Amino acid sequence: MRKYLLFGLGLFSATVFGQVTLEHSYVSDGYNDNPKQFAFFTAGGLNYYTLDAASNQVKFYNASHVLWKTVNVNVGNYEIDGLYLASDGLFNADSKVEFILKSLQLEQPYESKMTLFNEDGTNLQEFGNFWYATAFKVSDSQFKLIVSEDHGSDNAFDVYGLPGTLSVLQQSILPATSFAYPNPSSNKINIGNPLLDGENGIIKVFAANGAKVMEQEVSAAQKTITLDISQLSKGTYIYKVNNHTNKFIKN
Image (cartoon, rainbow, N blue to C red; front, side, top):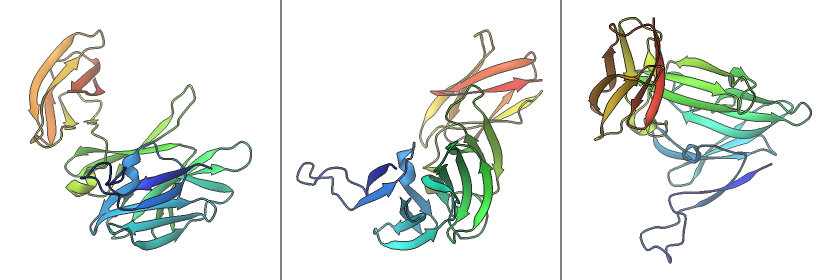
């Protein structure tokens, strides 16, 4: 069992840094590969959470660090170990908070599983034996979910379409990563813009042999980057937007 201290908005005493004030300290079981996910936004504002593996509970706190919900989850012969993508808007249109919970089997073969719960503790969907969950914005109204393994030669992952929508604040917890769609494509490719507000950049497209075949200036104001790829040969291409990289297939 791993326990992690969580801090509100300050990491050091105000006696060390005058502008930084410790608001609150939490203790949580489990592991999160993305520290930002100890906090999340709903329509009501900022929230925090902790995990209690001994009691199979998830606890939600508001921006004032007041406990507003204790969620009892049934994970069977498993122990809760991590929480991902808590949101009241990503997975469906109701006002309840949903979240993906990772849990570990307590006996051999010590497998993991990922399950989508809501704030009532209702099991909404099982995703299987995976370790990580990440959501990405691919257009103004579309998001994708990837659940993936953390080891193994096959590097297996599943991709899901998500029905929900997120506010700008809620989107701030998502990694700045772009996806190309439709993929593969023969004429035009749309790329979710990973640039943050106010950023400018250049999208560069490279063939499999490393040759640059396309270049175009982009800005954060373009929610979607559209490229005309009709003149490209069939094959796999890599695109880069500043330091964000992904690929698409021309058919």
